[in-house]
Image (spheres, rainbow over the protein chains, first blue to last red):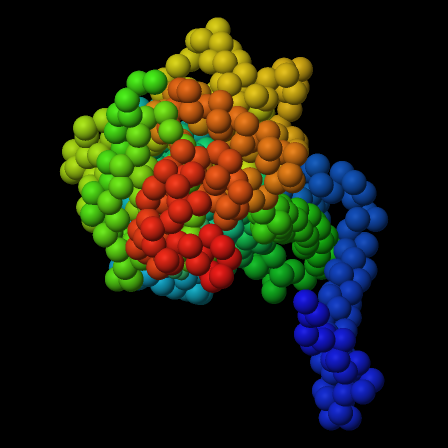
Length: 318
Length: 255
Ligand SMILES: Nc1ncnc2c1ncn2[C@@H]1O[C@H](COP(=O)(O)OP(=O)(O)OP(=O)(O)O)[C@@H](O)[C@H]1O
Ligand SMILES: [Mg+2]
């Protein structure tokens, strides 16, 4: 049977009407502008951070001091704070997000799933300053007492629960971050789970698996790479989150293991000090921190894209 | 020859997708150790029908079933019936071979047993071995049991899917066009396998291939628009159908 010649008869770009061509070129220029802006940004950050990197060398990233009086700057405490707060946030957010995604995709009846999905999307749309205010006025007091009080009383032999109980600090930052990345992780997990063909699920059900066993084998194991991608995507968000973290983390560079201690992240020190930095070296050091944050985010985000994208491709091939 | 005993009794079965009725009051009996073929034009409800026999139909959102399906004197739609247990007794092989992704050949067959709580390595090995032998796949895979199931050829994958169904010793195996994605040689092997399997199990198979139905089945059911038009001994249905619509269909004049 001859196929209808739909595609061969499509006009080439050159043959399209003149106004369409104009439109095409305008869009093309706009797209290139995005690329140019990106390149300019990278270049600027790089150039600005050269003085600090020249002065301190690689040890900039291994120096825990950040002292604007003595002009001794090192990023280690911020790198530490960023990673610890983000990883703690992941530890809290990942199980919850996977549970939410499983529930919404596989278990919830339609009448319940719809409003819950809506709420989840709303959660992602709340500006981060609102999370920050909530963290400061609602969460931090709760964390101070009873949570830190209790942990300090009975578990202070552990290094994680030592020190004064301010409420504000690493623990508050991690919880706020966790709440902020739950919508991200769970909505990507939902996409991943949705891309798993029903034939895989039915294959497992067909040999007499319970719903939970089916979810474990077909959905969680089958979508493992995608789930990891979603987590890394969440990590990417947590690493760069600025406003909310700045408001609850205490803003004191520290390498402490204690969850009670104030800390500082790469993003929060930028928000905190950029406006007030007066010496050239201070500014340049802050830019070097920004450069490090940028590179880390780039790596984290692109690897998560690759993982999620690969999972969906794998299943769409069948 | 022993006389036929009825294993599966379908009574007034109706299946819905939300409010659409796609199976309109079907009743038929399936005898033990027989192959029953389901034929009929596309969309007539063959897949839906066999998916009602292991309670898979209800896994589709908003789909539901009315009527009774009696397996070994027990209604699988009784309120107390557990779909999980039923699916261990009524296995299913799908149109497209679908080994569990990321699982080795061994694990594919062993999963059903592990779900039953069998952990002992020797028992698993023994059962996997016998299932693969029964599915006529053992000789081809005995040295590569650790390879992923998806690395096999299509025909081998389908036999792997049959083996994994056999592992939990079901009394009925449902097959939905199990050879439609396979080449003629693989198809032949599966057909031989089915004829061999009916010594121990009962098979209900959907097929679009009239020759296949007449080669492998004992009885054939002809479905049209969700209705059972004719259910007969295969030899009779294909040579001397009693309903004119059956004759039209098998002679290729519509559908
Ligand atoms: N998920 C679904 N939702 C709604 N209607 C469906 C769904 N699946 C199938 N149907 C409808 O149910 C009817 C029976 O479908 P079924 O898949 O059982 O047909 P079939 O005989 O197996 O066809 P084929 O030979 O093409 O596989 C069809 O009219 C189809 O449109
Ligand atoms: Mg079908």
